[in-house]
Image (cartoon, rainbow, N blue to C red; front, side):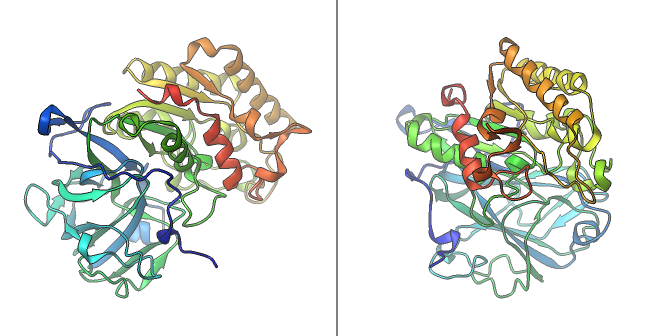
Length: 437
């Protein structure tokens, strides 16, 4: 029997920690704290986040939404006693009106992923108002709501957009069903009104924070499609950052448990933007996002209470754009320098194999690109002193008999993205003592 993901939890530890919210602007690596009962510090912590981009050149992400509600399922990491939600119009071309919004837990008593538990349904407000206009380029932080959420639990965020939004700000590869329906449906416990099921797209949704007693901060995974979950089970939450949090739960005392924020994105590159095409006839797409340097302020330095970053970028620069080893190494070193000088611990990943990858109309692996990949990895291994740690993902993923290829048991089928088992191996390669503060 195939049990729906919403009915099961991979957590071995499930605690119910969460807490209050403030509407202050978030600054790099910090979350506003308050004093709880008996002198216990109560801290806002990032539990879930997404790297957003502008909508594509056609389709719903380009046209936008109008008098529609969107219901989005997200898989949190740490839990807490209160929740606040961050919406974003970062890439919009005009102001976007949020008519109403809610947050709830899934209804595990029904088979429909779009159903929510009515006893947990909470209306979100913004400075006390149920509606708010997000200016072009702005982010919107909700007031806190009392909703106790455990570790490793799903939340459902529903947003009603009463007027034409135009170009959306979104994350494309959710590896999770989401839902769209006509009119204001955000308070409907049942999902029947959400008539369109999408296999993509968190629209205008940037993050979920929770309030915890003695919060232990959060860890950012700043990666590409390998971390974004390509190749892992759909609706399964088996991305390697998800499995990293599972491992943290097994190994780390709950008071020291950090959140894990996956701000990775398919097609992400160090030195190139989404619209730039790649080898093998691979077209550029806006959803692949901006170069890594331009993302630091939005995707790294603004995340709530983050203290460590796992940086795993560069393979797309090699296979898509044929960047040299020197160019890739220089960018990794510069990103490491900028992130570390802000006080974060930085763990840099070696680049996994991709022989056999089809880039669109042709195979894109070449011996020359393989030599580039090996040169980057050799530099990282022999210059570990420059970084807080080097995580050797290549060693974990590569077939010892054919080092330019994924291990067969880890290959999802496209010869670059690991399956659930390969994602687990990547999660197990991260040294936990460096991501727990």
